[in-house]
Image (cartoon, rainbow, N blue to C red; front, side, top):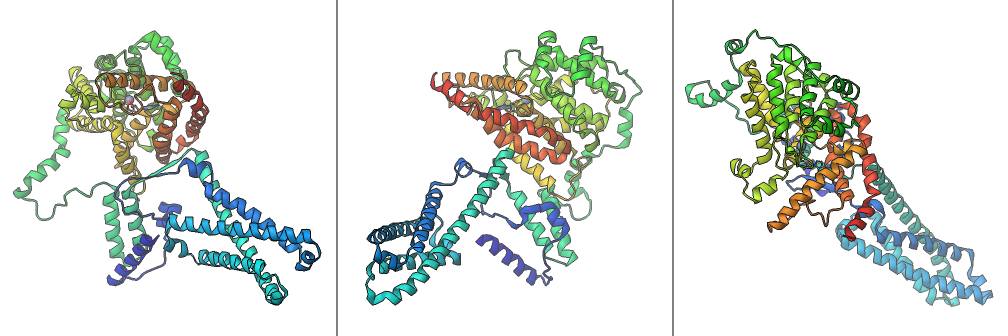
Length: 619
Ligand code: CMP
Ligand code: MG
Ligand code: ZN
């Protein structure tokens, strides 16, 4: 709060120095983009991703101290009413009433002392300066102290000597006590409101809010731009925002004349723009028909089920083995007329996809050809059912990139993760210097097969480069270690004024779609999701067993003796999948109608936590 004020003051001071006029807030542009969040920067001065975990304690219930205070407030109100209903004359006439009033006063005194204790705890918690910065808190404390003094006086000055003083004081005393009660009740209304809001969020399924410094920087700059009228300053701030949200802050700005001295720089740039001549020289007149030669039965099955998320492809695998991936890819390529449009030979294509399919290890419980099928199927679902084909203005090459990258994204996966490969100095970790060795290998494997089967020989150099760049980026972005950074980059792009999934942001959308499909288990109906969960955890546990044998630290979720299956999935949904899918639905609005499945699945897992805990305890 103090930092926010400081920031506002700093920006006002800067505005003054620059001679610009400070104008009231409220530009349409800013409120559209920042929505409700703009009033809360929540600047914590820490340069890291902020994960605001709404803890179970805060979510599931009000903290203990607040519960106690609520009970005390209720009790206190009752006592005030008991006191109100009797006069001192009643007490004089009836010894029982006198006794009752005496006891209520003692209880009141105890409660008031407990209120003092409560204030002390809150002071220790937030610091006395912060606590008493609210004048109501000061008043509250004064009332309590005054009430204690008055009760002590009341107990001690029962004699006739102080009757008048006592009467006046009692009037004030009762008024103050009631005021105190109303203050407390009001305070708890606020707490309940907050509690209900948090509960609402929890019911919606999002328990973690992940924010990054880049989002805050953009927010701050937008708010700052809103404070000026001078077009030059606004232009400069917008220039800054554009570069931050485009992730181009480290790109060189070339000033001065184009000369040999800068040749090394231009050489790089030139690579990006291959001349039209070369483009033409690479093209040929070869044509290929759009045929897939799929088994008739399978084609019918695909026609009926290809856009269903509950498609039972596990049974297909039993019948067709790894060739099911080739069949699926041929089906898509034929549907989208990619053979003819991209001049891809169906023969080469089959050979290439067969190689990819066979590279998947049959003995991997999770990273096998069915996973490749599942991910490709999900990417196609995003393209067709969520309309990415229109949103991303997909060309034929784009289709081929998305589908081929999905099919090959885990090619030749050894069933062990990057951490294990690095810890055991595996060949892949050595080759790729511990930098996403698996994903580098999947991408390299794809391009090895493409070359070996002459798959893209009829592509122009420009098209091939486009295919290669996009596909490599997509596969590398499936490394979960990249999730946090990539997710923040995506949100920064979405927060910009010029997010365009059909051109400049196509690449980031491709990466997002593949990564989303790769973590899509919780997005599927429970029957499929449960299968995948046992498979993925089974593979993790197999790795954990090997880690134990080798005396290596056991990776998270890889210990079969401690991993609660249900909890692992709730964490996966809360931390990764749900926030990511919510963000993705900003790009693909039609996705929203399917996201409910994730929350439903989460609830189903929540009901099974105890069951899995019992299983662990009885091991
Ligand atoms: P991979 O398919 O290589 O990339 C995405 C990763 O997310 C996947 O490997 C697993 O490591 C992880 N993952 C996918 N689904 C689940 C799940 N249901 N539970 C836990 N981890 C998962
Ligand atoms: Mg992978
Ligand atoms: Zn995968």
